Amino acid sequence: MNISGRDWVILTLSLLLAFSVWMIHNLSLKYNANLSAKVIAVCGLDGHENVSAASAEALARGRATGYNIIEANIRSRRPVKVEFNPSVMQRYDSERFFVPGDKLNEYSHLIFGEDVTIDHYITDTLFFRFPSVNHKKVPVVPVSILTYKGQYMPRGPLEVTPDSVVVAGESYLLESVKQVYTAPIRRLDISENVSGLVGIEPIKGVNIQAKEIYYSMDVARYVEFASESHVEAVNVPAGKALMIIPSVMTLRMRCEFPLLDDVDGKQTLYVDYNDFKSSVGGNCPVRVKNLPKGVLSYETDPVSVRCVEETR
Image (cartoon, rainbow, N blue to C red; front, side, top):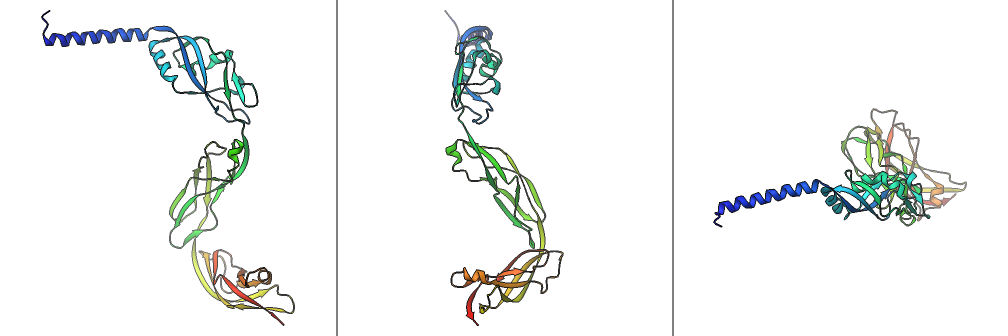
């Protein structure tokens, strides 16, 4: 045969085209075939995990196109999640449940795909294990990164609603769960009230009832005042006296602006004799009473004093 190089190229392309047409035609035809799929069950059974602990293999005889058969063979290598209605799950023992064969046809399109016609199931029952779970209520701890503009501060702590959530899981996992944490709340240069929704950090193997938490915090502008006051002793029994060192301290107050009350001379610094009796070495905290309205925070300098008991 005297065929030129160009003719060989044309012949090869023609054969490839003919083969492609033949392949497409044959793959579009329907065939009887054995099909298999690994199934992980998702089902909301009370007192059990939502997802089965392992997969079950479904085997069936059906009709499908060549494309669907190839796709089914690929799908059989990895499990497919199928959501079953709890009413079709039959209890076998405390943790094992099964789907009877007469209910499987309802889920064939989810197991094998939409374009597959199932004649009958070879495995007429699928068994699944849903581990038992316990539950308990734990507090929600907000995680925050907050900064404020000059002369702004919070009126109180960052609050979350709800402040506790129900967590569910196997007993050995719940033992170590004492609280749950929010995702980081990041707000910078704050000069007004803050609020919003934030997610909860997941815990592996544990189901957390709430997915989002509402947080809020009131913010106020403040002005700062400082004054010096004598420190008194209270609740001192008769015949006793407390010598306080130092006896004069500086009180610094951050007050909400505009001022809600007169801050001059109302407040009193004192040491409680009961604190002295329970102290180590006579070091006692200084307390404040009669604080004006609108005081957001205060501190004394120094924070504590040394007390010496005297007999009169």
